[in-house]
Image 1: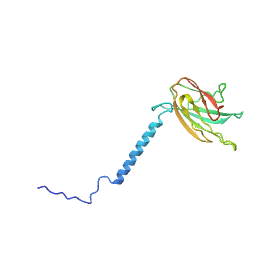
Image 2: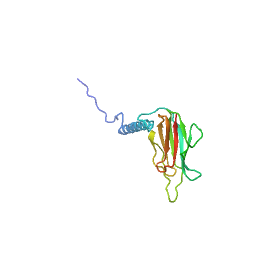
Image 3: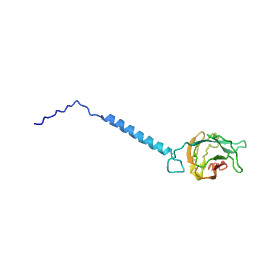
Image 4: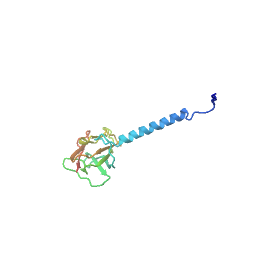
Length: 167
């Protein structure tokens, strides 16, 4: 004869509902964080991630001595800034194949009659920032995969332009 097993109502299940919910939340956060990390490695001019260290370039808006709006920049590689004919902002030279992260900041204060708005664009590399108000920032990463001379500019103030040379 088979012996009947008695069930003990005091035994607890191995995982409580609270434990399962906590595990589910941890998995969801991990998957979401992984997806965000993957997306952050995709430059604006490509459809796939690039695994290399980026050259960091800080670009600031400013006003020249004669009152014109200009861009100025500082690179993690250093170098001096030169302004070409027909441009108001410095020429910037980088090697072909570099991954470049632009950190843009608008440092022009608002005037009572005019709000300070600027943006940064390099059309050939799909680099387009949003319009930045006073002290707003944005970072954009692109791969310098084409050789040549390219104009960077502000669409709000067309006189704000400079030259990017990729060799």
